[in-house]
Picture 1 (cartoon, rainbow, N blue to C red):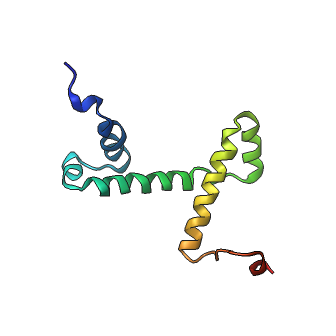
Picture 2 (cartoon, helix red, strand yellow):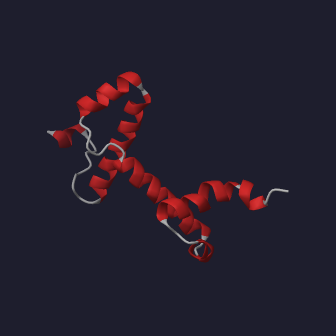
Picture 3 (spheres, rainbow, N blue to C red):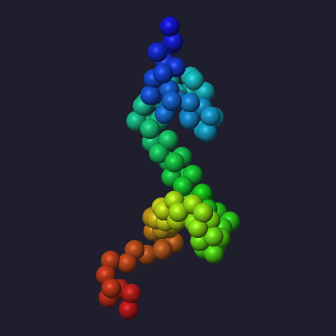
Length: 102
């Protein structure tokens, strides 16, 4: 009989990534509320997407997208997250209307 934890979605999608990617111990995981664990995983996902295309310019992205069209979608998502954090950090101002551009 296979251990129930080995096939649980929590182990696959929460516990293992926390241990592998964020170097959390089993005791750390057990001591942390589930909502905080989920927040850490979401933050790590945002971090990964944010930095996914570091070092590439738009010409290189276009070249990669010729062979793999999903690259353009992933790049756009990365740029959206970067813009969101630039606004939150005050590096960029959100434009709400066309008049603000003028």
